[in-house]
Image (cartoon, one colour):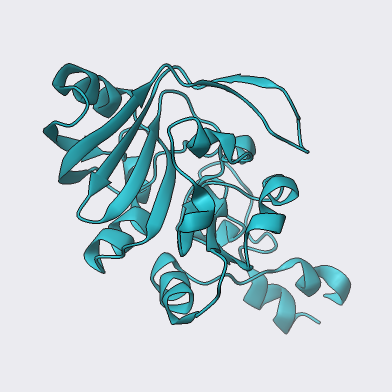
Length: 226
């Protein structure tokens, strides 16, 4: 197999990653990086497994975002700031990676979704998320966005009045670019496979038109042949 095995990476699941994050006692936030649904890696930005785990564990002092869900944003806009609304969060584009989560949410802030990156990555770039909504479910802050976008700059949250440095856990749909802006603000990054279409674990995806065996889907066969 040679160096091939060095490219195989095992990441904790959403449940495992959250357990690790909750065990930390850091002064700065811990990031749970949901890399398997990173929009810049072709993720839909709307998978729900990590969000489901956080709500199930009633995680507070935490922020989740941005979750691509224009349908829920519209419901929030119709209800208005300060109102409570029933939503079905996420799970609309790729429900095979997590069905929508039915919640009762309080609408905190609504925005047109336009902001400018603080950098250093793409500094001063104008970003248009096609509307955003800051909602709270139980004690969890959630940012809904109107187009899939990696949370690579803290202005995604600051433009809604959210200071990410005040949270203990930041659950972000990101992979690598976000670290330029977030590393000075955080204590640690825990990469998780939540899962999604941009997962590193290719064995979790469904294939129809490939010749088998093929590495690494049939890793055991190749190991036996060495």
